[in-house]
Image 1 (tube, rainbow, N blue to C red):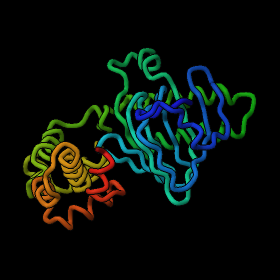
Image 2: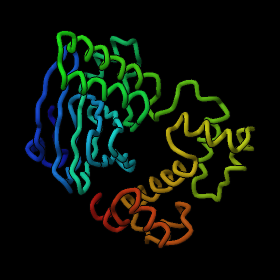
Image 3: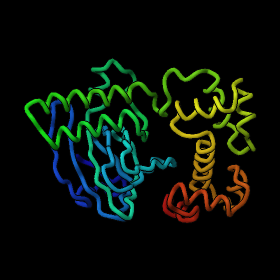
Length: 274
């Protein structure tokens, strides 16, 4: 597995310990450990990857979107997607299934190729764990089993679009999501959003998590953080003004929410990104 820093082009692989790696047809399997409190600067990968967190905790930040990777979750990471990593205070051990995204997508008849990062539990995590168990145990049939499981993982990803949205998401739910995207700075209630979709609030809450893998409130908070992050990077506005225009009730609320999501204060984020 190769990764390149976008800042200096240096090989970042030396910053971690690769325990072992093996190729199975179109897929490369790797088990890797990361030391605690490691921060990897912005970089990209040459292969797409399904990454299962076996132990520990880490985050990967793609632009202004931060994905948390606790134990027993799977990250899907497209090739060439710039991101930076922060490893938790217990380190992390991960199982990676890497593949050439364009060739796999072409074989599956998928146009365009898979393109957006996402973190999941559920079926994708179960498939990754089964592939890891087969790789560790090994028997006469393990190569065939692993290849089949790897293709199942890709199929599971293909069933969702780039934002983790099920392809059969109803029109009313898409309308609600668009309202959250466009009106994130306004005071929005679940009742108002449910009325917009023409459904009961309980049904909205359940369907939103099913299709977008997060709650309505968490999605709204993330949109506000993204809007604030964009202003931090591209404007010189004071933090209080950014907080209000992004939908936060106060400077203090903004700073608390921002650090909880990004692990950085707004000032630290502005300095780092610039």
